[in-house]
Image (cartoon, rainbow, N blue to C red; front, side):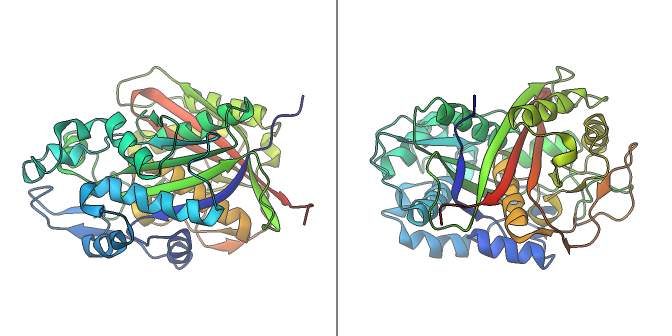
Length: 390
């Protein structure tokens, strides 16, 4: 039986590279990075290489919100990103068939820091409370869903939306993901000795660790085909898995991620030889990149061009899967593969086709992956096709 088609009808990215998908995409195509060395003792006692949204830019953008001071920094970013897609897709947020799903690893964790204490009620640090604030801002009648599963949260949230749309529970689902660079997250990753002291280098022989980043990614998933688009992007399939290997370390064999990739391909009725492009997680940590190369080989995708976005905006945690999916969708729309920034010499045990130069080629199908702490893995397939109703 043919599954219900799920269309991406609008999207938005907010990161250090800009407050719209267009601004982010243009900077990525130009190979500009938002990763910089920040010497900010309010978040870490020594300089760190991170990708951070400028406060002045956010303050100016937030003037377009109603009563912005009532909302935390992360909440303001969520509101701005959702507002952009709602206007673009012309959504009725009061409709009973419209839902909001929010992905985040830590939410308002920065409210626990000394400099932010007493600025908001203590319960605002809870993900559910934060989600309710966002729901009420848009007067949406449905209780929002929260997906919090380490670094696959963004991709997993789209997988959850897919299941609900296929069950015809809703017509439109706004999936948004976001996280901040905070004292908590920086100290946590530093305790793992996972942070890089320079711009990160995914899959490279000389990689030493990650750069954290902050941002928001938002997409509108709908069962209604967008009439105004000459070409449509559909979410054809998705899946998740857990390799049950370690609380923080991924499987050394790549089998957990491979299972998610294999199931996503099956769900989309695609085979590995039909995939034109891989948008990978690529954190630039030794174990993650090694594991991913093995999973790619297990899926018979070694020759397919792949890249990582981490060199451009860092690892945005709960936002990563959504932001990277949106950039992958732009790759499909523009038939353009962008360079995997930071990569020079292959440093993983299995030969994979990491993109060294931004180039054009016909693209129709993309497989996006994500992996995270606890052994979680997720994969999703996007397909571009002609809109024959025009």
